[in-house]
Image (cartoon, rainbow, N blue to C red; front, top):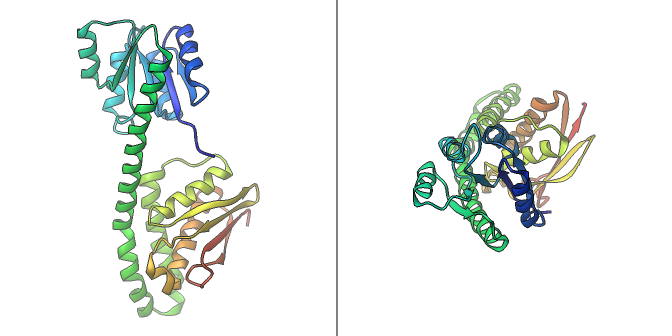
Length: 279
């Protein structure tokens, strides 16, 4: 099921919030804040796709809120629509200087509101796809080429007893950097954990998705090897994949067991990996 876009409505008049919610809540998840201060507190937790921001508010004006959003590297590309009764050119110039992406004048026309939101969401989706592609390319440049070229040579040159140690260390470096760079937060429930596990390894080029997720653990399947053609001929790379998933599980649950049931390298046509919680 496709995730619904989230719209944050910021207005100190509850009536205005209810009007906007009535126009949008059939298509989107609408959340609200009744002041600029509350909006700034909610932004990181709610992670909106579009912000509808009133200008005239106590304590912190819409201009100030917009400027703070656009100065934050993690939020600057969230579209901000200034919703206001003001129509002076000076106010629009001030809003543009604060970084506003669009304007709506009260009283709000429902069709115009829906059209603007759809248009801004398309732009936001294009940006999100670009960021995702950039992150995957960076992750692949960081690790994939190095591991593909170095690991097979390294494993040939060391004694068998140390091979697991080498794989463990390499998987730790990969997982640590990708987690810090792209994930950050510990997930709070099993489905989120399974999705994040997929996201981490997919940064390297995999095609993992969640097949099963319940209180006992989760099963991940994959139809695209994160190591490309090299993964089909080098089982050691499958061991790296398994080790990365194990480290993610340990980071969150401390005690997990990882089972590789099927692999592309083993001729199964796909990978299927099971993680059991609690040992």
